[in-house]
Image (tube, rainbow, N blue to C red):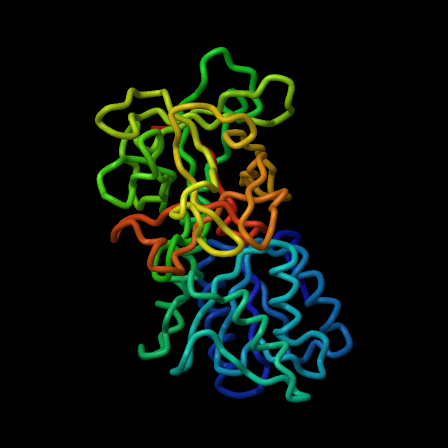
Length: 360
């Protein structure tokens, strides 16, 4: 069996010798026929080499297509089952493109072979509400159309994930600070596309106001000129650490280029839940509460944006937290086209990863 040195898409599916496997292989063949991506799927008759090819494919893949029927992600007695493929992708921050091919609730919740719930628990954690899936559960199956949809989904990520030129990179020592867009990798809510929302601030809605000196920040589905533009102002004496300065005016009484991305935990409206708090732009720098470190994501041209300050609720003191976006609660919604941003006490894969590109 030949396996490419680089794999764009690895097809993950249950090998049942029936409809589930048949549709997965039809999709694989249709993607191969299109000829635009390097696609791989292990042959069911690989014998003793099945595990070796699976390990290599997982290691080399850019993204994984999860062909989900109602038993996808079940922990079986086979150590190369889809449960372990999902776990590998999650652990190594590999992108997952879920494909739903069954009628019923999302995500799949198959009991394990020993009637434990490792599979349902992992599926719920990985395929949670914010992760958009390609829904073919009610459509007449057409492998060619599905392949086109999957390919477009993958290529949207690649084409929008522009590598930042050296002169515009966040660690460049430019005399003039480049205006940048900060783009979320994952979808800001279920049903939205990957790489389709941008960090934004503007006081239009009552809920935007934090207090007289600050406005809550959000991720919006479009760029709005200076209201979606930011500069990275280096913090003296701290490596790869910045004030993220807002280029617009946060309300009609403020001035452009005078406010900074900030996290506070003083107001009741700041708290999102026990593990996260909302982010704002404030008219002053507040030391570490306005400072951010960019952590490159290994193997990708994306960043985790780490908050340098500490924040506390009645249960926990968070010594490290990361910019994050996901529409789970009513309070997350700003309007139909935007979701409020927060910092969370842990990284949440693509919902805490960002592309930073020069503003057009």
